[in-house]
Length: 260
Image (cartoon, rainbow, N blue to C red):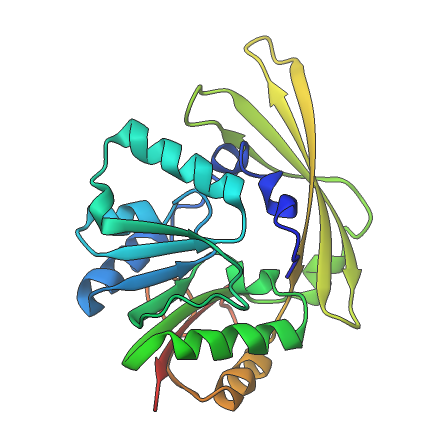
């Protein structure tokens, strides 16, 4: 994980615009939160994409993020929405070494958050820290993408069109381009994102550059990592519809229990 929180601060102003298309996991996390109950801790909560819907469903949730600017954006959204803040607690901290002095019934890490940890050492630190903050029957839910090396490297070092996204705030169009570089020894993807903001005349008003890195993790690698840190795997879904994980799956949705 990048220890300098300014790395994520750079994303705060554009995150909601760029990732507005990511909605398929929201219903899943809300349902799991309602069914299992709170209090819940979300690690890497960002600007509240998952945290807010869970709070709106009436479940007590704490959102933790390393970026203070992300949390400032989150607070601004809460003010605009006039949401009851008694259901949400926000904490600026690092998922590897936070200490909250309380336990949770469920801890969640949605949308590649765990993959921002760029070394096995950081992954282990985080999992052991999570275990300290779960109650005896607590659950951990985290999601990973399924690595496909052939697909990942076919466009390596080439800028390619990823998708077009409509900004939900002003209906402007964002054209997103990606350029990837792969460190297969360390299993790290280094990505340069280029965002062209297009006006009504179809001309580019501005071009924004952002960088991020993720560590890709294989199924059995994750299985043994969880086991070695004292967790029990309850389920592994292949998507947010709770379908069985198989060779065609693009997501790994891990449901894990804390066994004391």
